[in-house]
Image (tube, rainbow, N blue to C red):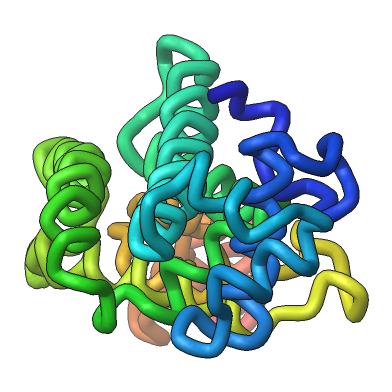
Length: 248
């Protein structure tokens, strides 16, 4: 699937009525707005402008439609993340790669919201036959994140007290939940990305600050004792001449 063309960019109205993609767009829109259980095959057909029999021609059950919606959202997001990390310069470090992945994931899920929000809302409620197929695909994506974070540990950029598995779960979980509450109409997704990256700054080992350069000071002048001062003064030519005059 082309990562530059999200399947649900304009749900319901983008594809010709009767097409398989139009049917998926319609189903994704209904699943993400009114729910999976509440969306029946007849309703999907009605909103898509199709006969119910035509829906069954493409998909034998609603579970299979859900499976395709979830696969499309996951594949689109994964490809966007892989491409963003691959596009980094050769000298990019592990932190650069993780932050690029975070930004790409956020952009992907919010540009394809009808599909990706279904995963966020129903991930723990999937029918067994759907979960059996989706979970391995999800695990493959999770492994990619684990590798990114392990590289960050290896480069001593990720704080050593943060376990890779826990950090990965927190990052992906937080990103996915933004599909439920973030409204792109209120602010652009770039604002959300900046906020997330700033919030996660605490997980990184910041580079050591340059030692402060001490200001130059003038060399200390040794204090002269009164005895040495008077001794030198009494031995001066003027003092000797004054002493001779007094003796006369």
